[in-house]
Amino acid sequence: MNDGGQIPGSSARSPRKDARRNQEALLAAAAAVFVASGVEAPVRDIAAEAGVGVATIYRHFPTRADLVVAVYRHQIDACAEAGPTLLAAGPTPCAALGRWIDLFVDFLVTKHGLAAAMQGDSTGFEALHAYFLERLLPVCTRLLEAAVASGEIRSDLDAYHLMRGIGNLCIGAESDPRYDARRLVALLVAGLRRPD
Image (tube, rainbow, N blue to C red):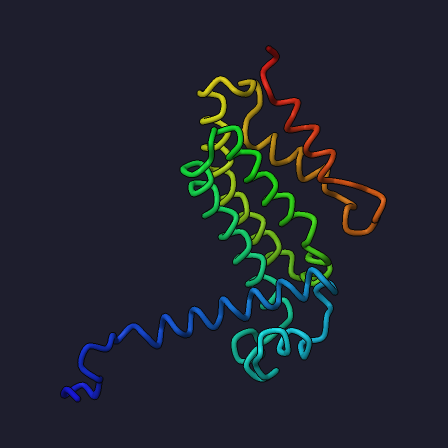
């Protein structure tokens, strides 16, 4: 052991990385439960999914709103981080844009009860919406511009309007099993293609 009490070769950052990994696992578990049961699901269900005690969840997230906001911020970050990866790996910029839109739609149609959970906290809801735009609008812009530059899609639509249109098509998808938001979004995306 060295003077600092650490095992030689160990990193001082390991506990922090472990804590971050544990919190990400907890957020992933909460997201899975929210998709299955909505944001009003019992905390014990989230704890069971995460393999932790209920007290662990409350230690990290004192209120349900805190947990809901953390889950959606985490999902926003994941969607934002996926954009550049898809663009680098995709066979074409248009294919990358289509895959990213699929992720975006998944995020939108699975946010069961977000507004209800944040009822009475309009400041928190507005902050989350601002974060949503701050993180996702530049990613969508980059993907859209790459697809336009490749000549695959039309150039007369900006990222904000595309995201807004997709969002509007997703409204109500969680409450009406007959409504297929993904199919309508696919039609919208198909309409972006340049005519031959």
